Length: 307
Image (cartoon, rainbow, N blue to C red; front, top):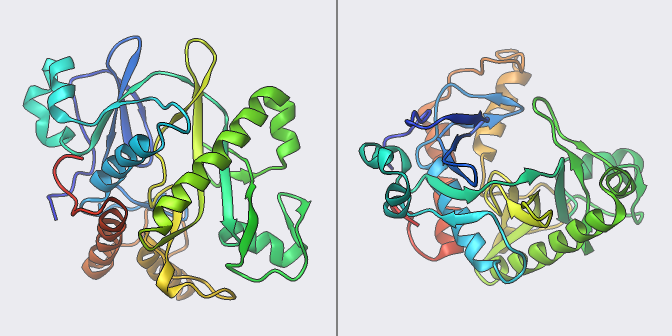
């Protein structure tokens, strides 16, 4: 594991700081996205970072942007520190903050919906279905169980929330707000991306239960894939050898952290608000190991300094 990075501080205008990333302005056409090792759970950013998490998010996204380039264009330009420094020489003295963590991307106008594709009934979708038999208010087939495969996969958009939870919404609402042509294009692209990613991951022993894609409009108004793609932060990865419908599945993400926090909350040692409790070293190490293992299985190599 490398020394974790809580936050980057680069000599560029800071455009946005999210839960995990700092996004910097490079010029009128490009942004630099830097993934820290911050980790959030239950909408609270923890005080302790998870080593290697940011490098996994960046390098796995770079891998997927390459694998999925034939499906749809993206904002991705490069994740090479050498290439980035050649374009932005002012970053030469900050290689330690960008190597393996930074992506140079095209600027876009982000679309205000998350394009979620669900191949299996899990998470918030299972919670809603168990109560009402619906997903975002739309009826699903009766008799489904937790973690059942959904055939065909379901497109389930969500509104983006700056804080708190994103909200699952009916596809009809997305069409009303974006227009039928753009909404249909994003739905079709999302389903094609999920299918391609699912097939690649399946050959490597990972089930992609669900994932979210984000899109932006380029200067010509064409939608392209942006943000991160098919990472443990944006997706639910399950080991195929352990899959069994009817129960919660093991996953390659921050589940060790969520499980520990749930125990702390149930015991009354945490009220669910920020700041989060101090994380034990074992929970941090287990979470880091899950991220690195997801990368190793999907890419076929150990996590390195560069993608």
